[in-house]
Image 1 (tube, rainbow, N blue to C red):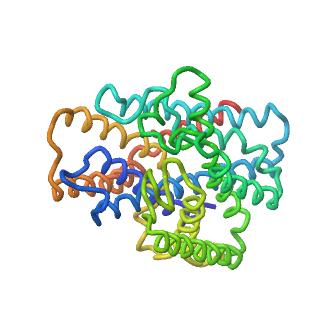
Image 2 (tube, helix red, strand yellow):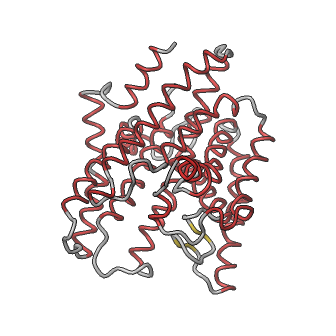
Length: 360
């Protein structure tokens, strides 16, 4: 059974990712990190990736759980489930890196690990995760939350973006993949584990609401710390209570809270047999939610062309830059609807289904 709210959450997550990536490639002239518009754009960025990874973790865990309940037990059977997913996600990450490569004005090196290699790790670990009890997964989540404080400078606290996307040799590539890249497994597996809990607690909305309440209290505490210590509450990187690069412990907790809150709101009453939030009014998002991997890769093709064309060109003014960013973000909604009506199987999701059938 397809859950409408999951497709809607996927759609919103990928739209947020498109928005923040577009804003990074087309930053308006004269805007500083203190501008309200910059804060709004950063807020979307801070929410986008955690929500995207959490709901992707939910989907990977759901698929693995259903396979295990259907009798998938042997190593060969699990390999036939894992290999297509890991191979496709890793290949898509390579494609993204080529589309927005630094040699053409982009932001990635060819071999840069990213969010899709993080999801490939999640798929690789899924056969283990489905066998772990909830208590163990909660413990692992606490380990992930604590890991930024434990790792300290190993996570690259003073690194620039270009340090995180560059690697010299296999050992550095592995370190970017596992603990000091843009989306390293430690601590970003926290969101995958959070997605597994959302799946297991799908019939217990009240339990999830209590967890959300704890997250709200923690978020308020971080705001109070920011005010009392007179440091910024949130920055992409630098000296702040919440930092994205590298992900701080407080960022994990606060962004996890917002991801859970977004899921609970959009879920509405669907888990108990009712309608998702917004009823049919938000159904226009569902086609996009079915091809998020395809859209994620495709929007980098557009941004790669823009980045190449804008090399050496002056930045756009605020209004044109804002219009281009919003236009590029929203255009994927009608494109996804047309895609699902005309060529639904021509997508990376369709390719995964075909690969999975071949390896059974």
